Image 1 (cartoon, helix red, strand yellow):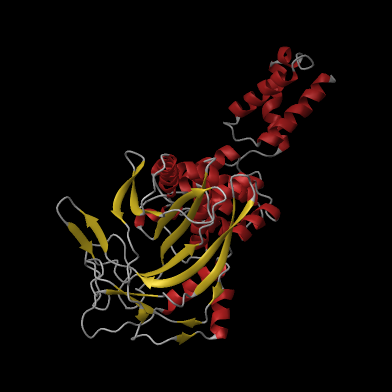
Image 2: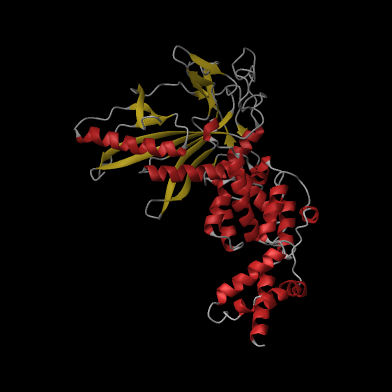
Length: 480
């Protein structure tokens, strides 16, 4: 890459988290029987008329604010006219001329650890098309997806590496999920990404021919596809040839990009204003209310966890990677100020359990109330950390009081110093030959008597209190 500069722009199609479609009352669904959730408006039946989904507008405004876009207070729609099997009515309702948001920025950290401002050109609202499934001898169409509300987010060509693209997509996805604009699940198609990539000689202002990468199903594969494409285009240019303008897809098996179709001149979609939806002027008071009640952005949450809750950076990242985990954590810290302990049990044993069982946190019986109650028992020396794991095993599968579990399993910890002393003192009397070794081997002597104490109490003694009693007895016996 000494000879060439990489130029990358990103286009993301994001499914809005609405219950109904963007311009009809058709239900939004995923995984339903193909063509079982089809609405007459979405497939262009004669006489049907579009109606604008208010929630879709709200979510679009929230996305604009989160991405620092200038919001257009007048919502206008256009028709994009073309015939293709996935678009039954022959046109798509979109925003070609008046996008709801323009000129935004999302800051990421680049390879050198420096902030990089990714300029976002526009965000516009449109409707989705039918899903195509290509077979050997035919293409199957599922119109359940047709009409679902989308926002398309388009960056300027300011990215220059696969690493930067990954960081941008991770940051974008995090914002979309945390603001509840979208589920942003690439495996379900609610977040899709087209990458436009070209190379040009260093210090040249003219862009090279653009190659579009489409239909890539994960951020990891997008990164691999870009790295391969940079290498492929570099080799072509070094041979003195011209990179053809085309659309390519990523082959997971070969880890290469594969030609889908060549691009010639841009298609004339004959855009014109959507005649069935008049321009909508958004009420300023309503807009302020929508934007005021938005969810806390990930960057703000990350800073709060670090500065106010004093959590470790690694723990913060683990919590923020999982929206359900973060949501649970937020509820729990409203009930207790033992933030680190809550985080410890969530990202430790609980996460291990979820991975082993192939479950999500919402599929367990664990509640913030029960987790905090268990932690309170630990802090009050009622149970040890080891006993807490037995309690946690139970409350993950059953919504049941930890206090009652402790009573039923007889897990109550021995924390009375006098009781502990009465249990361990006979052991000292019977093992004076061990005691006299304390000055030479203090750790071994302490470990021996603590081990005996744990055996006699079936590990139900509070470790800190037990060790304190053992040390006091050693000192006392040494002075005799």
